[in-house]
Length: 314
Ligand code: ATP
Image (cartoon, rainbow, N blue to C red; front, side):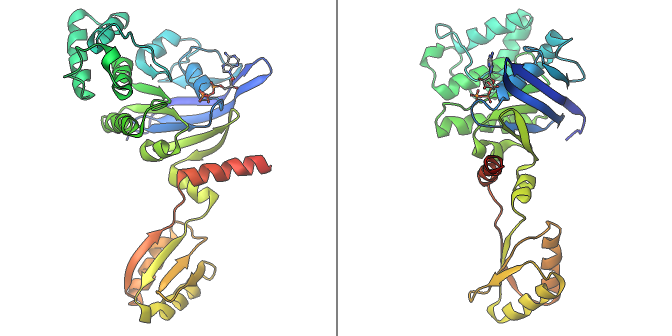
C-alpha cells in the first residue's frame, strides 16, 4: 500500500447556524487505504464527505484531496473522486446500461469510451447479464451495484461511499462489501461512511469514530480495541505443565496472570501486544506444551459502545 496521503484535513469544521455538524476534523488517509468514518445518525459523516468534495464550504479549517483544496478546486476534485450518496437516484424507466450511459456523457466520456467502460463495470459488478433490463426490475443490491458503477465511470482515484449498504438485507450488504474489498485489492482509496460496525470491521484498514461532529478515536479496529481494553489471551497447556507455565509467566511478567483453571487454560490480561510472542517463546523454551492460544480481542462493536459510554460518562 502506498503511504501517500490522498485526503488530509486539519481542524475541518462546519457549523449550520448554532449546530456544530463537524468539529475540528483532523485526519489523513493513505493511498490504497479503506478508511472508515464511523458514527451514528447525525454524527457528521455526510457533512465531511460534502466538504471533501467541495459541495459545502468549511466554517474553518482546511482540507486537501489529492493535493487540491476542495474549496478552490471543487470541479477538479470531483473529476478525480467518485461519490456514492446514501440514497442514489437511478432512473427506473431506463435500463442499468442506459443509466450508466447517461452519466458517462455527463462525465464527458465519448460514446466509444462510455460503451467499453460500461461493459467493464457491468462485468466487474457481475451485472453483465442484467444490464439491459429496466432498473425497476432490480433488487436493492443490484441497484446499489449500478450506483457504485456510476460513481466509478470516470476512473476516480478515491471513492467516497456514504452508507453504501444502508437499507440492504444481509446478503445484498455482503455483496456490496465484497465489491469494496475487490476495489481495495485493485488499489483504490476508499472513504467509507458507515454506522454498521460489523461492516467497518470487515472492510476498513482504519476507522475514525465520530460523535457529535468530533473524532473520539482513530486507528485500526485492533488498535482501538487495545485502547479500550489491553489484549487478553487464553493459553491452553498440557495439564501437568500448568503450574510450571504459570510460575514461568509470573516470574517475568508479574502482573499479567489473571488465573488458570483446572482445564489448564491460563488467562492473561493487561498485555502489551509485544508481550504475546515473548510469552509464547518463553513457554516453548521452558518445554511447556501449548495446545491452543485464543485471543479475546474486543469487536469494533464492543469498542464503539465503550467509547460511547466514556463520552456519556464525561
Ligand atoms: P446520517 O447517518 O443520518 O446521514 P451523518 O453522520 O451523515 O448522519 P450529517 O448529515 O453530516 O450526519 O449531519 C450532521 C449534523 O448536521 C446533523 O445534526 C444534521 O441535522 C446537521 N445538518 C446537516 N446538514 C444540514 C443543513 N443543510 N442544514 C442544517 N443542519 C444540517
